[in-house]
Length: 43
Image 1 (spheres, rainbow, N blue to C red):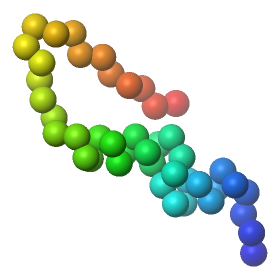
Image 2 (image 1 turned 90 degrees about the horizontal axis):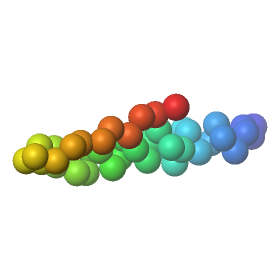
Image 3 (image 1 turned 45 degrees about the vertical axis):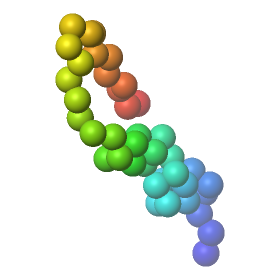
């Protein structure tokens, strides 16, 4: 059986949410001194 491309990308972690999760897991958390931090919101 086949699924929609969007569903297959999501299952493989290749949608926006999956990519964001991978990037956040790979980057260390740091607090910038005196800098304004900007959050990337998910839809």
